[in-house]
Length: 256
Image 1 (spheres, rainbow, N blue to C red):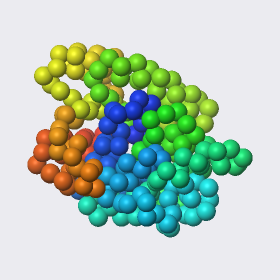
Image 2: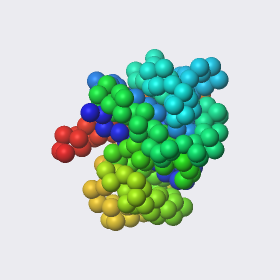
Image 3: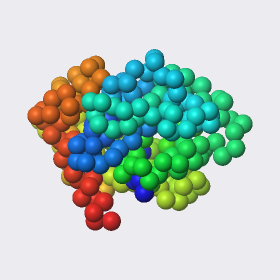
Image 4: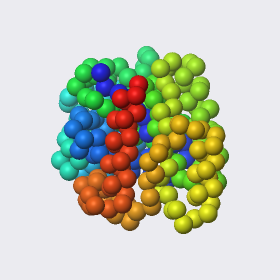
């Protein structure tokens, strides 16, 4: 049975897509079979995995509307070694078209149920907003991984996200839980980063992953080449940190 994790944060620009793509690539390198689901109409995870979003015959859009199944929509990320359910700007219209559909919050969950035994991990890249797409991701998931920059505004956004997760858990998905907070784009030279990091550890304890992803130019450059950072420059500090995070995720599962 696949472990299904949302990578979510209602604040934009906090490294959700970078984390989703590079965690998928890291787990694939660690001999796990991985499916990445791009739930963001911007399609950045799709492009970051090396798939041209303008050339899609089928995508998450058709999947949610019941016009295709996972097998017809998925594509292989050759550079990352994982499968992708891609998206493009058409997905922005799905929320309007889903309004009259039955069980609209569970469309993704029901689609993924068809392929549950085919993967070790399914990673869902959510858009930076509380929308029907995000709700679909949270309803389909076993848990949420929250990437966070160690800055003041990130703490404010975290409170909103935790409230959203509590509401979904109470009303739509009793299996949903917080897996952990991942500190990303971390600058160890900045006093504020260290202060916020210490606050997170103090308040959330073992819900804060040990791995810290540093701010890294090579990770930032990789998407423009359509290659996960791990494949673009495997020896960079950012790539090595995501490999460490993949190992930490596997260790976390072993303890469950």
